[in-house]
Length: 258
Image (cartoon, rainbow, N blue to C red; front, side, top):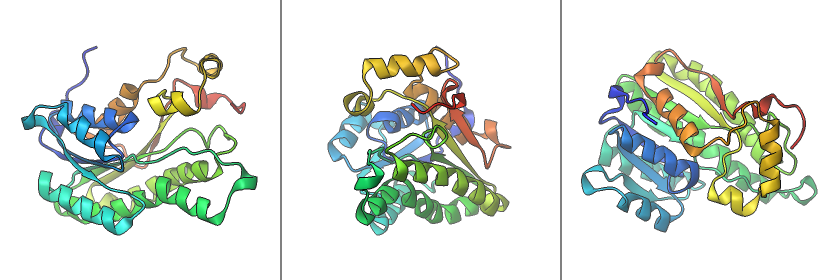
């Protein structure tokens, strides 16, 4: 498939959290393919290094191991990334983890950790990069949401609370940062069968049932998500902000729990 090329992304500094595997790695690949100046972080140092080594030296992304739950360490990573690739003009808040937990088993410690993994770092990363974006004339921030809260998925209360909140912060910060020409949007993926999803959560029967529920009988891919993110990062979407864009082949239109 011939994919769109966005000249506005050439040499543009981009930062992606959680970029070493799964959807995050697909996002890294997509921006490298656009000739952006890519930096990313991940908790998994080995996966991060291996992803970088797939590229020739002249196209190799910058990588730092970082736990985004540690906000001060994450701030240092963002500062180092800006020194390496330039003032961040595109921020993709991707890092997250969809751990399952029944309400009866929830503790305050688990709750705080789930929100730290899936929500808190989005806000503080935006706080960190927004002044530089404003001084540079603007930028694009893309927050990774999920359709899980729209579908009322059980055993995910911390995760769905976080992902619902991402829609809220995206709308609010689009308003707050808009006068600095900073756009803020959210992307809400449907079922994407990453290696983690296949290993932990979804059997072949689960996948078959969900495909039957989708409007399009097509398995959403990592590329489908990264293509939307690249579009939102480009000048082609210059008038798009405060939006939560669902990429799920129509699964969120189904009201049943599954």
